Image (cartoon, rainbow, N blue to C red; front, side, top):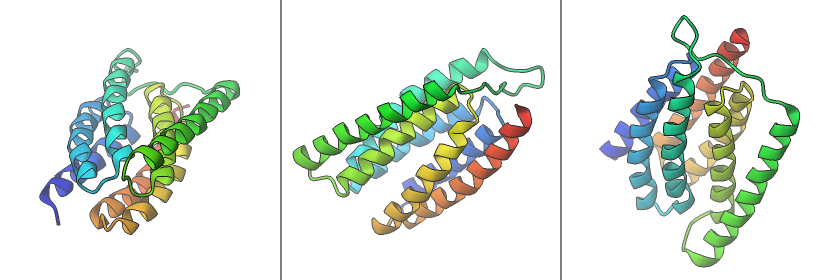
Length: 183
């Protein structure tokens, strides 16, 4: 097993666990994990995932600043509603992003699984955006995306990362329950 992948997996799990508990420390810990994971994904030629880590880094800084401005008296972030028109527009943008990135990766790189990797990257960005904006719906999208990621990482023999994403599914279910209680 790759020790860098192990360290990134531990940081990622800790970050998601803190996110489910609406704790602001989730963001800087997540930032460290995505920077390390970018290297892991470049090594196995999952270029959309590597690019996604860079986008996640930017989103993590954005989310951290938003959360710090929306803390309750208990030190946890306050949950916000997601209007259906916004959700629909964001999902449509995710689909367009998946098509554009997939086409680029399929035709301009030697990426493995370019269309699937691109779709997962695009919808992960939507989920991350929703999480930064404190929407419960982010957990539903994370559950769906992470389930598919498990299969892709098993296919790429990233067994620890596949296990991590299976853990992410469980953590996302827990996050969904926790955040729904806070609504």
